[in-house]
Image 1 (cartoon, one colour):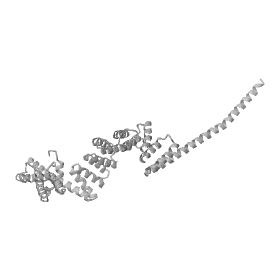
Image 2: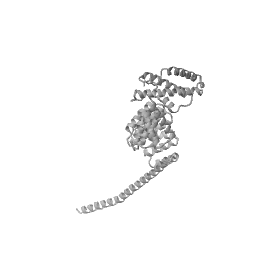
Image 3: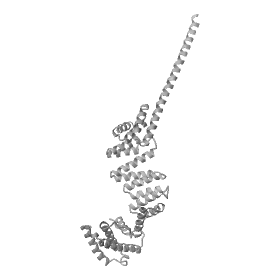
Image 4: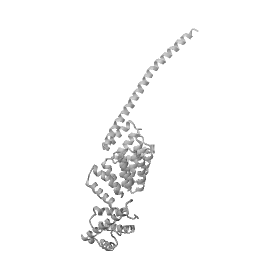
Length: 384
């Protein structure tokens, strides 16, 4: 019984000693954690600072300096995929394709669905001339995942793909991609619509180009550049009525000799084309007769200045046209063209031949002659 109080006291002392010994251990743990956090925070700060420097140098066009910055950032945060991506992009811009490819491939292995990585791999493949891989990576970028601004990233990738397809003559594919881009483009993104419009022009679809310039004009109807682009696109596509509308507005906003000449020609075509829908028989007759008279004058002037001596083929063609003109003049006059659409078609076909041959043999046509030449090209191979 006498030992029990002493045992209780001993256990109490042991507990107190244990508790007192835990205090410095706890303090040591807290200090260690604090130091570790401070160290990691310092590393993160250094990585962030070098990343900011690298982004600044990259934006300023100093790719080599950006490479050094991103390399300095990487040891402080080696698992940071954003730093590795930026380093790879800087290497690419610095022309160091082999090193850049290694980084991009490593990033792609970790995340093959990354839109950013696939876009950069597409650019590398394009520089290396690998068309198949370029198209594949562009498509994976379009449908891949994007950490920042996914809609803008996918649109940028699609437009780059379109540029690449146009450069490589794959116009049908380019037009398909552009149609998708146009459908996804927000109405208020006027600059984007203008970009798509210019790409449609490169891809040979002038009508779609006009639609995109018109979409851009919805946000700023008086923008002279977009008016001019819409007018020129319509002109190139043979829609001279639309061309005249937009070119006249562009010329009012920002007059220039170039726009003025196109506007004059478009107006001459609109007022000289006998095949425009909605014309009365009388107006079709008047236009056909005016074209015939002008064609004969053009033929005579070309022969008079020695155009027939330009080459043996041109000489024979002009002689044939001269003989045909003599025969046709016996049948064609303002009265005979009334109510005879077949004769009007024959007459206009003859005028178109004159304008085509004389444009090759003599000087480049201007004014009404140029208008008639373009009208002929517009209906070439058709039955107006």
